Length: 322
Length: 240
Image (tube, rainbow over all chains, first blue to last red; front, side):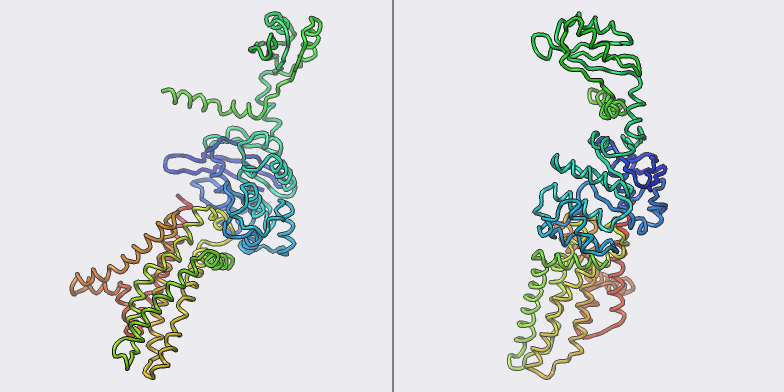
């Protein structure tokens, strides 16, 4: 279990991490989400004792990182943003080195075999790490974090540099590991966090802007309105009138022509917690307007994220113009 | 700690660095031994005086030991492997000691040739004093420890190993300067103080065959100070 309380890190006057608090329960995966430079890596570096905080506490299974660093470090497997691998060693040598470094107790050969199977690097064990591709280096980095089977795993963007198939493999691996480890995973890829994590902490400019489960995040922010996106062929003015007439509809936006002569996209906003799709279909079908596509648009994490950080984006745009 | 020590030793021999260092030391000490001891003075008499060789090695080591220490900490930082070693359950003091011990071991391997020179010389003369040679060797081994710790310290200051090597040479020259400063200070307390801090001064007393416990303690203290400073630098970076 990981408890972070009022953690702060200053670099001069710049607050890289500003008074953040969160907890991650044992056997759960916490997603740490934020744009580049939000303070994700800084927080992880503090948790692992690589750098110290300027204020606040970080407790790993009840052990304070600052007060008892060695005991805390024994509990952690850490995959930093750049896998900390030595190019001049083979994968085998490297894992044995990490095994000795962490003073792992498990039987060495079977333990390392197991890890190599898990991250699928068994065929690479005799290769020099320098000659491996980015994806394999990343996996060796992950293997390193797993050595000694620590109860807490801290993974900083574990899927960066992997191809889509590997990404799916690593995600399902992390999910599997999350069952009996406490995992913190950072990412700026939103669907990834949505797919893997039980709980999400969104961080921006060193501050936590949201802290919730993936589902309830979209519930909170999505409740302001419900949106349906349609693609319909026909005369725009008439379709717009038709859609506006549907019960509970608040607003209709008409998009530009997508396929000539007049297939357009329509965004229909209705009151919260209403479902207008059936009624929309009936009305359009009655008037013989073919519906080419219709989807109800639940707020994706991407949109939540943009909403939460929108203030900054606008500020930045203004700043850029001035 | 032993894991780091073993990894470092291995890495000296994966890259040419370890071989080059040992080779260069052999070439220089061998040449000095040949020209200044074996074939110097009266050709028929030979000489049992090792001091020219040992005092010249002072300057060779000043430049070559930085090659051994330059990448110890700088390279870890550049390649970000320090995120592994500094987040592993190892104390900073343990890490620094292991790195020092690895580089120092390579140096000691290259010094293992010294008794061989004694054996060679003893084939030609009975006048060889083994205790004097032992004194010389103690001196050079202590000097190597000072240079190794100084190089390790400099390596903790930068991410660039070339910068580390160059700065280490300058630091070693700086350590030498106390001697020159002492000679300008003339006589008196200041001169004595500077002279007592001078590595060369103390080292040369070993090369003329004087074995002083005070100097042994001095060298060991300098090593301890550099290792301590290295730990402090690593610690400070964590707080920066």
